[in-house]
Image 1 (cartoon, rainbow, N blue to C red):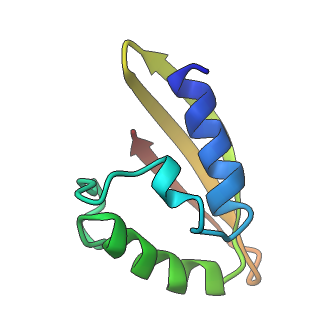
Image 2 (image 1 turned 30 degrees about the vertical axis):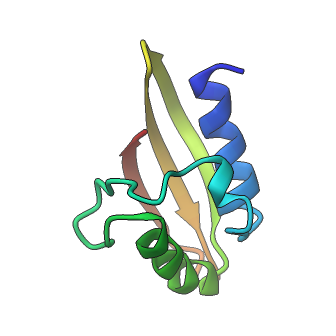
Length: 91
């Protein structure tokens, strides 16, 4: 499985299923978060997800690029208020 496929699977199994139970398959305990509003580490990501998932988001990958061992994602999220926000993630 390529890194790009792993990231796509992560989006479906974690973000779109609103489920952090498989997070051990994707993230080390000392994960370094790129978002300054989210704590570093897997536990910090789980705490972020508690609030994020409460908004019932549906994540869509708009663009995904793999170069070497890096994957860049541009995605959009839609939730109950039907608003859209875009973010860029680098995994």
